[in-house]
Length: 90
Image (cartoon, rainbow, N blue to C red; front, top):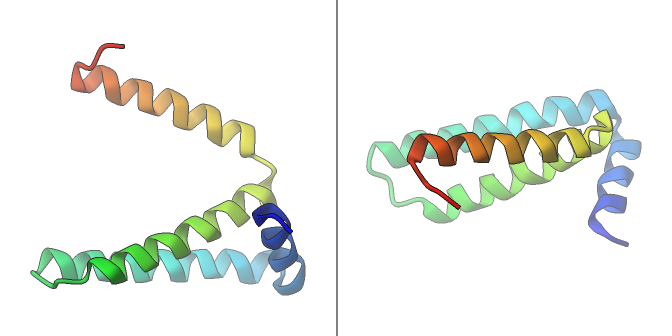
């Protein structure tokens, strides 16, 4: 079973509403760890764990909303815009 199948199974088992609320919860936990780090905490492992949780939930949201191609294109264009702002040429 690949990751997409696992994510679809999670969406089917717990439902779209519950998984959407879970995205908020996971993003909040990441925010909390980043705030702790900005105050001097040595919590890189906690940050890494929360980033993983957020990424997993975002993948579920991509599946839920059927927007994989749109996300890919927005990401590409935003990275290009960032390169321009940074003065990085290909």
